[in-house]
Length: 360
Image 1: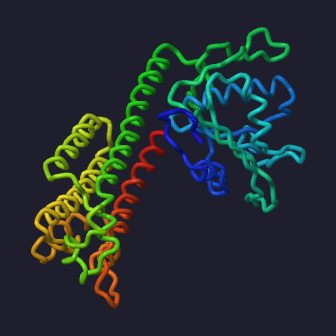
Image 2: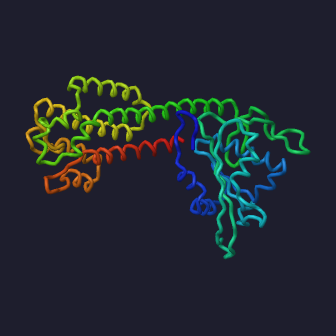
Image 3: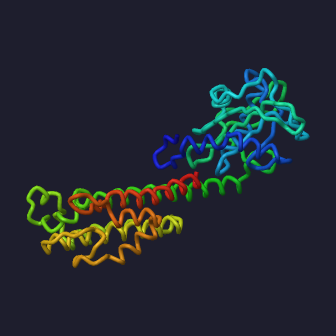
């Protein structure tokens, strides 16, 4: 997981998908190498300096790709599927230990091996290694990459390597500018998405008292709410004006983030904010009028069709029907709001997670 403040959080499941059997099988059907993947007959003996430096060169380049890169082990130069040698094992810890002294920057390495049955019908083991940087900043070489019996190192300390086709090469000035520009834009997008989530949490806190009331009251009890002292403390004390001012402040913060937010995420957030805002303002009006009705209804007890329309864009039809009709009990119908808000929030969080995964 990422440990740098503001960095995107990528789940372990996402990492595991990169080295899954399915991912390996897809690569094995490709003939040719590209920017984001490379085939190797073997990683070699990682106790040997030459093997470590050659691997570090590829790792440095893969880590400067936006989504990282993949090594497929057990494939010859002519793409024949040879499989791993009997003694070779894919060990994440060993691979990282062999190369980390050459890497200036935090990075992730994940390795796996799978037993497959290639076209020739003989079961063989293959390895797959996924590599990526954790932060948005380019990864640099920390040491010269000296190979025994070669005069020039494969890379020098401070070098930024990139992938170009099937080759890991030293970045030129244009490449470096693009990497740095991309890093700045990336950091701003990640910061904006994380800030939006903080705003969502603040908006959720504003309706906590309303959630409590709707969650415990049945239809038969709503008219008694204004006169029940044990529930009075749960009702929001803020006025409509104060609530509107708080929401305006949050919306101003969102407007500053808008240029850096994907359209889908922004639109989903706006629906979520409208849903919460309508429920909260309705509850404040009812409190001031000395009445209290279900969150699905208007102040006069008729269905709140406008709220239903907003909710229908946030929830599946079955979910919304369940929340809207409520749960019948011997004291009336319970229509708790918390599960409905949780479901709309979960949908928003899913988009945030998907956006951050893509930015990573």
